[in-house]
Length: 89
Image (tube, rainbow, N blue to C red; front, side, top):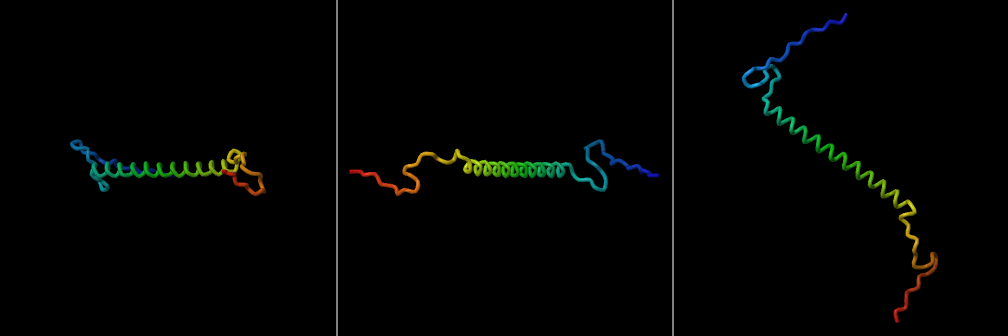
């Protein structure tokens, strides 16, 4: 049978809200680390979104250049024929 042992809660002092125990850290340091971590998450998310958008734009551009919309129908001379320069007399 599985037995669970009880874990003692970390006691908090009532006067300044600091945590006492073996892994206690000052609240200002914890808040600084949290802000630093939030900034890194925002930076990573921004870079990831920018990379995905760039890849999608590249795919769209490649598909556009392969489509008939990118080919111009007007030509200034017949294909396979030598182009004659206009006479500007």
